[in-house]
Length: 283
Image (tube, rainbow, N blue to C red):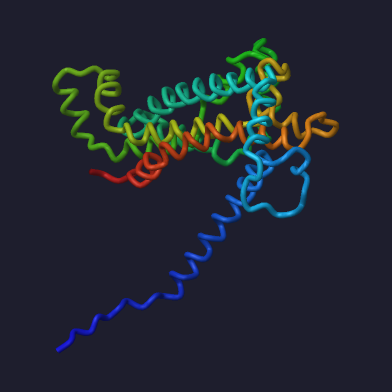
């Protein structure tokens, strides 16, 4: 007697979700693919409205890339972004992890109130605080300096919230056992809390690096000198009215500025997903 193989029926909801996911992917990827096609196209073909499904001139793209990299301001701004994003990530992780450790596992007067006040930063758009912060930077003499770019961005409410919730999942018994063994307060933080929260730190570090690399408004008002401008501000100058750069060069600059952060995320996206999935989960 032949066995009947029953296939699980495909639900309408599943099909709809797949369609929506594919459409969202297309919406995100089509502009990027169009930009690649403009870069790797023959001279003068960048403004053509005729759709191109693939690059038409590899040599033209190499020439465009060489032209952009020959611009000393672009290379300098690229280095500024590497320094700015790296220092911001390191300092955010240092301050946020220390504060999260205290908020997550230690009782002190006013803890909840102070935590709520810190999280209010998540509700304030950057545009509401950028002018007061910029005036403070000017008063300190930090305009067009790396500390003026980095220091005001080290207080991240997002990083504090994420790491606090992550460290709350760490069993308190680990800290109590370390204290019984004679570990100092800093020793518990350095030798136990940080290694246990490693995935959370990596997740926050990756996201902060990407946000710092893409930051535009704050560097725009602090790095008024082109020698200190990061890549986001420098590339934006290619798009300004009256710019002398043709479309293919503009698109090439935009593509080159996006490649590092896209490659960075692709390389570590598993850590981001894993860190978010484990946030607030014990075990």
